[in-house]
Image 1 (cartoon, helix red, strand yellow):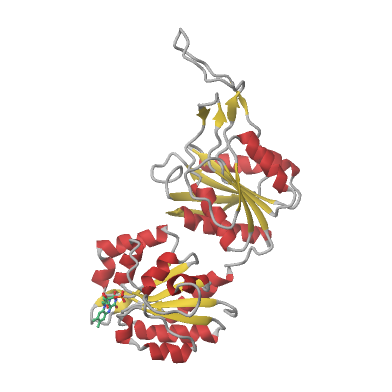
Image 2 (spheres, rainbow, N blue to C red):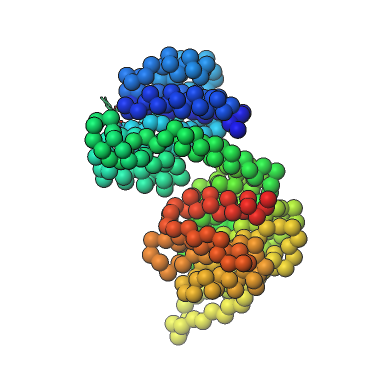
Length: 398
Ligand SMILES: Cc1cc2nc3c(=O)[nH]c(=O)nc-3n(C[C@H](O)[C@H](O)[C@H](O)COP(=O)(O)O)c2cc1C
């Protein structure tokens, strides 16, 4: 099941380091190539020789070392990996990673990696429950890293509490799950829209909305990670362009519609995460509008094209996923929208709630299909929500 996968196993200086030997053995038995990176503290608990013998790979421990390959080790290590597992993860490596500290080979590799990273913490319960560690764990989750929660039980220090490394079985299952879905959208083509459209009033002014584009960009990132050929049609945002997507920058709803129609025929799915303005100035002008004597100004608006409704009308095999950003009667409005616009799934979010929705890194959504609610997703990062939305897309595509 892990055949062809390369897993970097980061081992840090916990008393549970010996369990990493078993984890490595199990991953190899399932077909993976395991490359071990050890912190200096980890080598005090288990020798690199143990891992080298078991994995038949050299074990990396030093940041400053001669490497015969052209790229430097801390960058090339993650290039070769499908996934990185840090098990056991000490409080130290967790707190360092959450703050972008890169002062040894493992922490530098983690900072340079663009593959999924999973932490399996193991530590004394006081260290685990400390404000710093808890904040760091939340931060790591917000970065999109996965944390395999430690369990309750007797700890190495003799105390009872939370902090025991999760069971080896659990860790191996998570790795299988995460790597299996890695490329589950290979050969699929998906178009995502993101951001809030800008409807021009004159050359310097426009009407827009509070959409930051974060949800759509997170979805595009998740799609490419999972092998989809991804086109991202984006209204203006302040976000970095995701890697490996066909990126199309647009300004207003008409541009977005035009670009969408170029790609729609050949794609397998569309996820419309953009906040497309419902209205646009009826008569945009080419010169800046000046103050007038009355001091008042009224703007006439006309309806914009309803892009998703149009796609729902013309779609053949394509899966169509929309968003319903509502401030009242969330589920009722989402149900109406899914029918009216002939969608396959709708992601409903209540944008009246503070700390979720527009501009925020977190969201809380309900996913519906034509039959009703598919999943209620509690407050979590947009990156995690993107993963769940893409999981649902895969279910519908299958
Ligand atoms: C016997 C012993 C056991 C330890 N066990 C743990 C542990 O389970 N979890 C942890 O976070 N730190 C543990 N520590 C402390 C770490 O080894 C220490 O914080 C170290 O700096 C971690 O470095 P690293 O994260 O670079 O591996 C232990 C220390 C000793 C001496």
